Length: 346
Image (cartoon, rainbow, N blue to C red; front, side, top):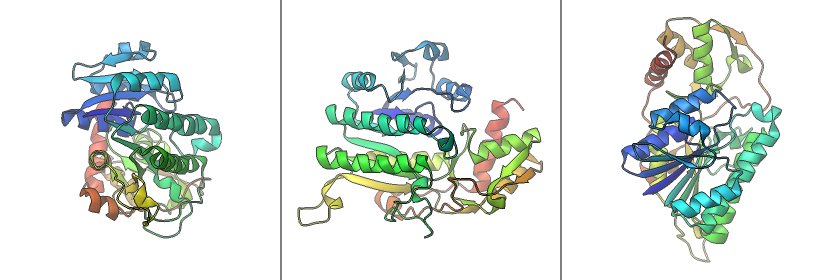
């Protein structure tokens, strides 16, 4: 089938595009390549997908193709006219929207970036799917929508009306917007609440990269909430496996007028994580062991917008798709550290 992967220069988007190409699908990528973090890392991912980076850098909305059959557009989702033109030309079967302004803490500093990319950008994707119908729209939500929820593990049926960051609020908004378009226009949509993803080519603003980089360079490592944090760390290959399975599992209208509202709309929400919660200090120890070097710890209070624990109940995703994350933390950390050393020539 023909896939559009937005955020294709991002961590998950790049890994998904690679998997789709391996499975024999036709893949079109789209990314604005903004400077939220090191753009060289983004260009490196695209180069790994076979693109000529010189052509990508000079592109302004036009298509860049790789020898492996991967096509790429450098464009913002906020460009509604440009997006409509791509949908009209390409005629996608499945859209996986992973483009977004990421980061919880950055949303405190630059809130408009989140409204532009995550709200305006997402309505443009929905409108494009409405006017140029697709079989399935899969989109990135986030575990951040659970906010200050105390019930552990987090279930996709839990109330998520109390976000503690603007980033989380935009992701909850995406779920509501998708439900509206599924209801009004019959567009099958599935939202994925990602938990903490890590692995090779990971984002520099996330724990795995930040911790490794600080330890290697002998810098103090900021540990928030005095280390009393737990995260559902999920390895990138497990995430991609889940996204791929979900993309082929198209929601259907199963109910009649007498059934619940949800059964009458082709709409689903899943948690996608490791279904285990790891203590932050244990995660740091695994990195120290792999590097053979101790971290310099700078213990910090809880940061605004952060939550102390994330822990995914993925039973519904497992039941519907057979999803089963199986990468141990030790193996995942080892893979990331090996990539990090290779990428930076250590």
